[in-house]
Image 1 (cartoon, helix red, strand yellow):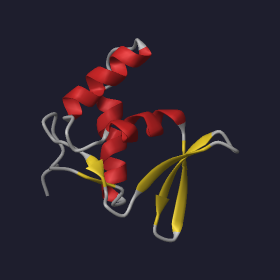
Image 2: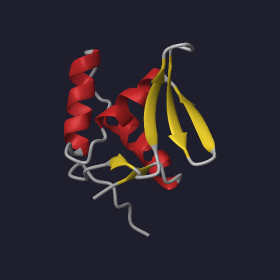
Image 3: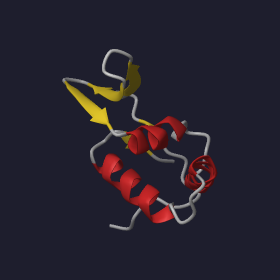
Image 4: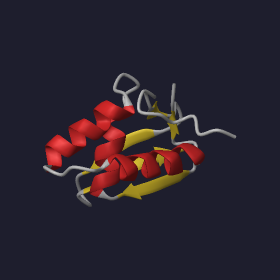
Amino acid sequence: MPDPLSLESRPSLARKARLRYEEVRQTDLLLLPERVVKLNPTGAAILRLCDGHRTVREIVEELESRFGQAGLENDVFEFLRNVSAQGWVETR
């Protein structure tokens, strides 16, 4: 099956998923039915940009600008493929 994810894909959180910052633990959580996933800062930064409007290209550019680092495309693609396979993110 071909990879549906491209630089022009517009990922968004799955309808069943909610992203929350928990002040007490100072951590980002992804809330899913019957599951809570503790996110690392990088994963949370990517998911916060998955609004269904930004393309993967725009997400990569934003992260590279924000963190002053080039060459993040492969890392972002790998993360998005993993979370898409788990049903946390949908792409269009």
